[in-house]
Image 1 (cartoon, rainbow, N blue to C red):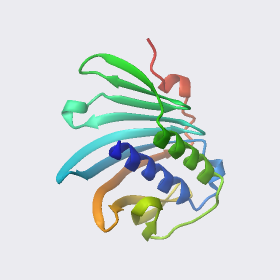
Image 2 (image 1 turned 90 degrees about the horizontal axis):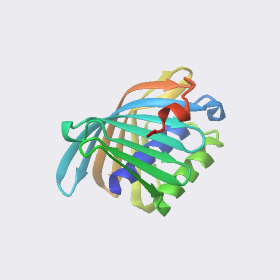
Image 3 (image 1 turned 45 degrees about the horizontal axis):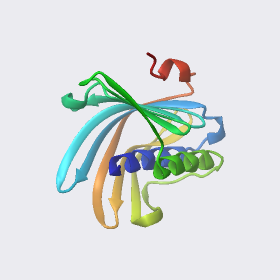
Image 4 (image 1 turned 180 degrees about the horizontal axis):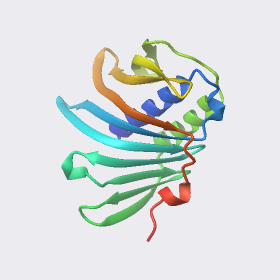
Length: 177
């Protein structure tokens, strides 16, 4: 659950960091390298994240090898998980934290804010640090986001690629039988 919290925290940061009017964003695809510190261990992963406004997210795991091919889809009030190791698809109702995070993203999409490199204090002691902001398709986007819980660094996200408004199709990204 902690990892999910940081994933959505990342999305919130992305959407509040645009210099161009963020209301114009309909969808985006992001390739992310993630390093999380959980219980003293560093967990590395890489995934492709696809977001379609207002409430669809698909996360395709590229690494580590054990998790490669896993797919997580958050759509409105439900979560679908595909585990290729077991060739299993499960569906759950979004928990309160997951649902409120999607609501927060949609609220932020209506705001017009621009952030500079540096730390931003969020709720519950979470702090994010935006590094290496660059222009991409007229949007100012971070290449590195560091996540702190209080004064403790808990994660780092490196963004390899952004695709914005590429006309993603929710139906095509959903899992089908």
